[in-house]
Length: 242
Image (tube, rainbow, N blue to C red):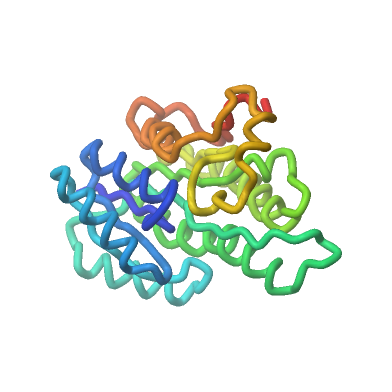
């Protein structure tokens, strides 16, 4: 069976993606680092709607933990494989660069960039053998235009954009696509500390986006209809930067 793995799948955009892909018929693997209660709530929401889901805790920034968790999953699922990977895990540690601490820089890079590398490298082998796969990387408006106070986050997401374009060319002959989705301001826990009233005045659409709107785009990129789309970065930002 063809599973979908969503890193950082317990809340926000990740939860919406899990629910949407489950509704499209994928059995879903909900990865989380520490918030087990939120992951179990996502699982419950999927199962209440007739979907199939399981949780898989690991820290995406720990290469050994990633390998161990995915090896154990494969041992439990000898007839199955992960055919859709959504690299969604990420954190913000905003600060002006002159005041930025080493940990604020390294934590953001470790999860967004190194996490992409560790998880994708592990999952990619089976996709290439099966000659089928969809890799969707959650990046950001910040990685395209840069945002002040987010030098770390902008650097991490811009790096993943570059990696998306390179990897797409490596694996296209094996029918694996690699794309990135770049949300603008989306109403989630990650943006709850922002001044939404002020920021939405800068957005042509006049509002923050919804996690479900991002999930709909991810769902399309995971579908058979998107087989000829690869190496792309698709913005979803209400016209803020286009």
